[in-house]
Image (tube, rainbow, N blue to C red; front, side):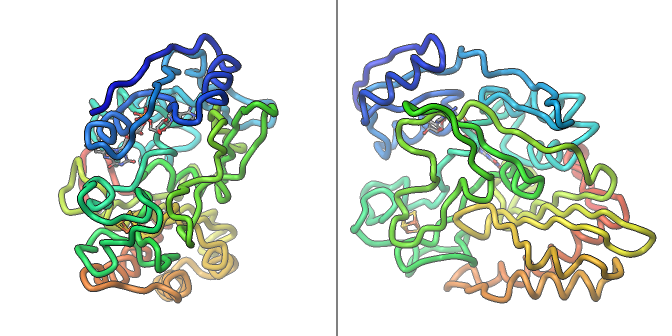
Length: 338
Ligand SMILES: Cc1cc2nc3c(=O)[nH]c(=O)nc-3n(C[C@H](O)[C@H](O)[C@H](O)COP(=O)(O)OP(=O)(O)OC[C@H]3O[C@@H](n4cnc5c(N)ncnc54)[C@H](O)[C@@H]3O)c2cc1C
Ligand code: SF4
């Protein structure tokens, strides 16, 4: 681990001033990902700008009936916040599927969006990795790629985004509020994370001199018929092989509206509005769910060790939609699989 300077930001403007004047500096919030990356020599910031004490740690109702979640709200506080539990239970379920209670106590909302991939080669500086060292090659394409992506991959990178929370935020139409030297702007969640293309070193469309200040959610929907299913090697404290956020609005047995997003399968939370459209107006049954899964996975491509994910995702989508339709979401609290 290298030597670095440390400075604590006094307010958002101060944080932006610091990052704008030093392109090699990094913000630190909970530190649960950044410190690991620094220990492994993957990140080598000259300066850490501590934003953990900025007043961005509240969850507030907005005038349009939605929620504004400060970027520094810890993942645990967000999951157990009464307004989130009662109005956005899909989000609670997804957050509680991630990491461990101790990590969720430290991890911030903004940091969760910006956590880096769990591709082992990215963390191993002895191996080529286009995301860590652009142009060096991708060790995973012909290497150990069991946890890697099946959708939206490129010849430069097949990594996945590892977040659970972000899958629910994608399904719920969140927006990301950021501030930079030119002022504030809002980024639709679907546009926040990027596909790897030929620039896998860029995970998101956040500019290097910007800070995330908040995540906003629109007025609540999908409070009854939702489910977040996370399929992983262990039932706890493991990243998703495939995860699915499904939410339905039902009128009788017919799907009036639907949301469907996947984690663990792509470089970004993978929401497919085409598959959602295919669910609308259809009966909530296995044939409809399987058709939507096939549509979502139409362009899926497996590699040597991860082709199993395609069928896993197909069956997982059908099961999650069934749980959502039945109003029996996967329980993240008692880990029972219903
Ligand atoms: C062992 C382990 C298991 C885990 N399992 C899971 C899991 O199953 N599911 C899951 O979703 N997550 C999991 N995580 C990831 C964890 O949720 C993230 O590490 C955490 O959310 C990151 O938040 P942080 O505040 O600690 O970020 P930091 O480590 O402080 O920062 C991460 C990055 O975000 C930047 N940053 C932070 N806040 C801001 C901001 N407001 N504006 C701009 N930049 C910012 C930092 O500069 C840094 O680049 C796991 C982590 C560990 C260590
Ligand atoms: S998949 Fe991406 S992160 Fe992993 S080795 Fe290839 S370029 Fe690096």
